[in-house]
Length: 146
Image 1 (cartoon, rainbow, N blue to C red):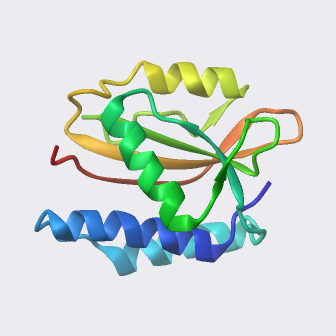
Image 2: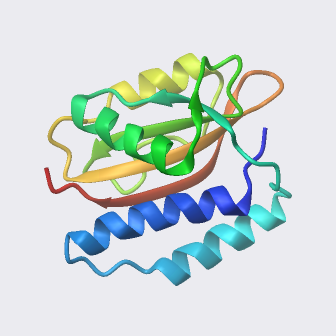
């Protein structure tokens, strides 16, 4: 289960648009280059077309719905998804681990974040591995202005 550079660019564009609308400077080109080189090294070039979503609060669910719509992904169960989109709010720089033994572990990790009052949105994309563990593909964060 891999993602295309187009999908990563779409997420970065959406995150960048949110940051710019909040009058924040966002290092789009640096973030894009870092994501591009990391994903090229990992050989990730197959597109995401359906996602399972983990978004533990109202505000994170709304943000996740915007991301899904912007990327024209369909929502599906974790067993049928080509990736997992996770949106949480937290004051930490890296609130979620980069890999989890299962979808359930990822869901529990996301539920432990502040989510309602956290100052930053964190948008993650995870791939579902053959053994049903999940591994981070991309992570972007920006200030929550709700």
